[in-house]
Length: 271
Image 1 (cartoon, rainbow, N blue to C red):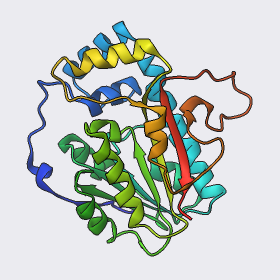
Image 2: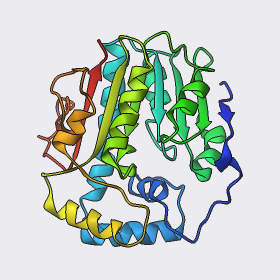
Image 3: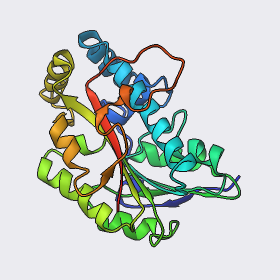
Image 4: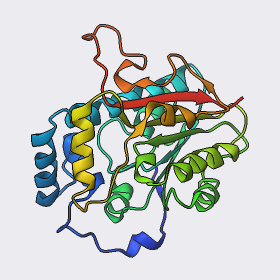
């Protein structure tokens, strides 16, 4: 197994604050992971007490990503992935899904959380044929992200850009959209954009719970309308069924009929 490359940045030297709940660690808790602290479990439990469906949203988001990557590798022939805002490693990480199907796949993860950095080198291992790298950088600085990613990925060949539950952390919608557009502009024809984020218009209970969380003083996560999420894909060719609740995006056969949830996503190709 290859040791993943790690590009340290400013957050590599930050102290991990275990006294304040952190969204990545809370998400990890909802996914059933172990990389969290009591303060994160308390915050996660307080949220689920108001809206138990958040656990379904977290796990459905991860399942959506798994199905996206499977399509990208098996049907679209993609072998390069740029996953920004990856969060803490759990099960079915991008490189695990991609390299199971194509061992030569190359994956670059991007995050700026010091706890993610601490776990990346230990957990994000690649197949011998492929590559897995971690960049300590911020989605708000796409030029740095692209420059560092180019050390592992060939940006002249198609890349799948994954923005999973990260754009909601960009409070200003116009800036969030410009980040997605700017990153895709830098990638060649045949590249793909995968986006999923918490949405408004499907589950009022989720919206009330998230609004209350944002008002608590924690780092906010902004729910977007379905039209706003769809606009991230402007100029791209949406893969069927388009932008839908993540549970309804190509659900696996044989399971129970999926229900819509307040998390929308889609996948699109750059012509």
